[in-house]
Length: 222
Image (cartoon, rainbow, N blue to C red; front, side, top):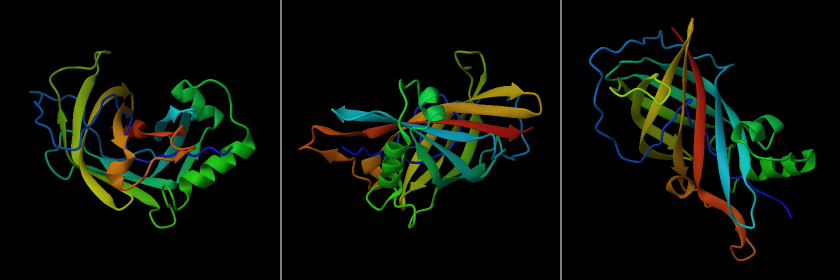
């Protein structure tokens, strides 16, 4: 029995929040304290996706990278752009499963099958859609800090995946790392909103959930 993953990339960014598909009103902080040059460390930055199961299916963890990225904080327009390298996304590595808190490991043969399904024409179709893009229109500092007491930002813009574009708002926690600012968080994404049908078999008894949970770990040069 083969397993398949419905994964997507996104960016962006580490992020401790959740999105919907309509722009939100956000309340700006009077005196934002964190600024950056806009440069993203592509080696350090990661995107992680939790693919939940339906029925007798399996939960999967997917890890991917950015192909390009820049982000200006405290910007009210043209704040940045994240380009996700969809060809880099890999399912069920030991690193990915640990990151998502999933138990057990997946053997190499099963990983190869899952990745072939995920990257193929029926799911991400990376030959036709090798990237996904988050165009960030604004990055507004919020009044309320995160639960850890860190500064938070609302990243508002548009996300394009599989040739489909929707508005996206992401709430990101910003952690000072000396020369770098670490943004982290997460958001929900529905595959069907982007023209991807969640995998089902055995009359729906086995499959993956439509809704994915996307996390990010983005490092910005200060």
